[in-house]
Amino acid sequence: MEIAPDATFDFRRSGQRVLLLACGALGREIVDLIEVNRWTTFDVECLPAIWHNTPDKIPGGLREKIRAAKGRYERIFVLYGDCGTGGGIDKVLAEEGGIERIEGPHCYAFYSGNGRFAAAAEGDDMTAFYLTDYLARYFDKLVWSGLLGLDRHPELLKDYFQHYTKVVYLAQTDDPVLDAKAEAAASKLGLAYERRASGYGELADSVMNEAKAFLDLTEQGFERVKQCIVSEWDKIQEIAAHVPAPEVVADYLRQAGGVTEGTALGLKAEETALGFEYGHYLRNRFTVAKLSRVLGVPLT
Image 1 (spheres, rainbow, N blue to C red):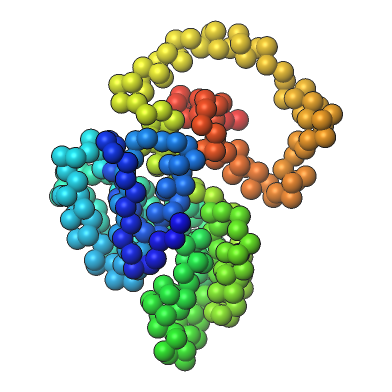
Image 2 (tube, rainbow, N blue to C red):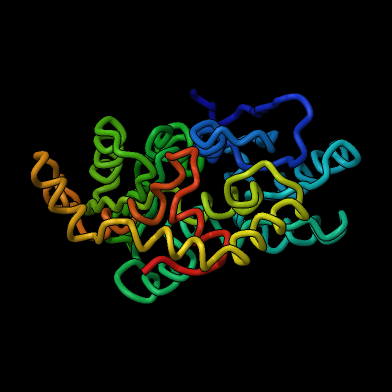
């Protein structure tokens, strides 16, 4: 699925309860999350990604979408950061009834994790220019020709990037084609290149929270599931006592010729950690990771 920078995008299924309003640069990832989890709660509407080059358009575009959707959905949730609007998005959301949005100033922050991004920005990342999957895919149209006009005025490259030292590619997916595009963009800008496997980060967390972790339930229904788990916790623990210890399971895997460490798959420690944190999005079933979300108890 391709969403061009200047295109709007809608993903609809009849009778959905929650509308996600987002930037077109996130549309593909949002739909991927919905489809892989078989969530049946959401419709999605996206404004053009190229509006980031003229961010004053975004608040008004969101207001128009919100007003058109009121009365047709139980809830509207906005998947935009501030995105260079100087508080304009938050002002519109407050005026339209206190509609909530994902936390963070921009997509780089919630892909990285807002806390991690803020901490990294205090160090070497202060001089980083960021790319995501979408920006790597459309670098020439959105950045080189669109935002900066370097196709017409290449002499401005040094002025634009004299204080930058590297391109950081926050990779949502493992795609060699996008890796090559991101590295080519860094070369074009004359900057060092660094790839980080960010996954979907807090974007996934926010969409999952709107889906009530894993089930298509009302607020009351979700709370009943949570209370049922809590009330039956002793029985759950009894069953858990019969589950083989991790060391035993690891031994079974080794005997079967499987791997038990991320390094055996060529994964870095941070990539393995991301896999544990977000792997449950790929499994449409009740897992320990989803149990931790329901109860609000972190995995250890």
